[in-house]
View 1 (cartoon, rainbow, N blue to C red):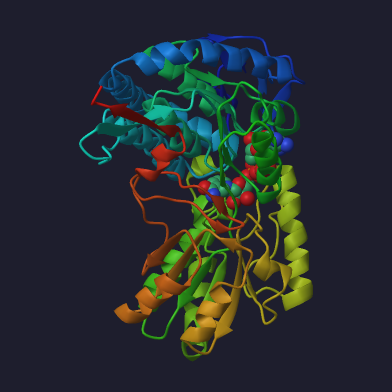
View 2: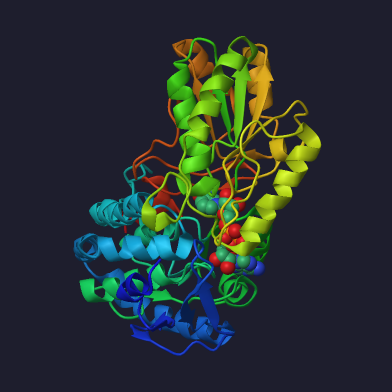
Length: 485
Ligand code: NAD
């Protein structure tokens, strides 16, 4: 990465965006790093508890006016924001790649995904309807859906713009005022979109972005007494802490957490399609740092060897390099993530022997790990059970449909699952019996903005995206009138 390109897209420094202005951050400053080079990128003024107080107060002050606007007006403003994101898409995509490391074409898709969320929920702003309830001739009884008020949004670094918009767009469309705490590694794009939102007409205070550390600003936001609802996307351990804080305030919280998702291949599947989708889902999509990674490949024993041949060829054919060169696989986001994945490579070797493919880190600057495949006999091995969040795939075999479903369910998570088969009955039995929030049939990771998304079991509760996504940010009021007096 040349200095020129870096300076082209980055501002000199970044600070919290509160009440429509950039303001000093009072937390310990943070210097972000380019994961492809380990070089410093930019200085971030991080917010602390006092900055969260300030942001929540400004959001509370802005809320009533925003909510009382005509809903179609909120929709128009969010449509304009989607347009502004598209106008700045080249720059935003470069920023995503610089901060997160992901290949440029994936960053471009992510920016478009961000615009699509604003567009999708803009269209719904004036369609959040209540119901009329038949209580008999003496009454008129109906419901209205009202915003919560000030909503808190705590997001991770793996899809910094996509997840920001997935959570913020429905909140703003339904009339809430939001305070966002982006992840430490990736605050820049959230701050950039916050600025675009102001330019697009989102009133000051309606969207506040406070970069900060999880244990300081994040914890303060999750437990703030003047916040009215909490949306959290991240790990199970943090989700548990966030939920406890929210519950202390009797606040609704929804949790989008991790996964260890099975990609299950039967002998009647199109093998090439099954392997291509699985490889994309565990190695290519943000270098395996994706909640819905296809991190467990379950192969029927009759096609085990043939499928492995496809898998090895497809994995060895992947290019690995800096995101700006747009390879198939970029670096991991940070040194901490790199070291975590290294520890899993060691645990994998100890449990399953030498990997079939990969297993090494790259001997160069940057947090690069080879796409790695372990054949795992022990289904309880850590690499077969725990979310690694890196390009590491565990392969297991099964004998029949019953065992496939049992294996698919045999983890603590339940985010997504995929089945590859040409037998429609089997595909739907799998969809019926596997405990996961989304089932893919003969593909991986489909779903426009309208498909609800979220977890069973330890993968969380509540649903983002689609019409269900509106429920996280609204509450129901029932109005009951006696019309006989
Ligand atoms: P993380 O839990 O470490 O951090 C997520 C966010 O929480 C960050 O903004 C962080 O600063 C903040 N945070 C940390 N400690 C906090 C605290 N005590 N109180 C409040 N906030 C705190 O997760 P991560 O490493 O950033 O992200 C990876 C995880 O996110 C993986 O488990 C992945 O599966 C999950 N994820 C889930 C989805 C989904 O939709 N289900 C999507 C993306 C990522």
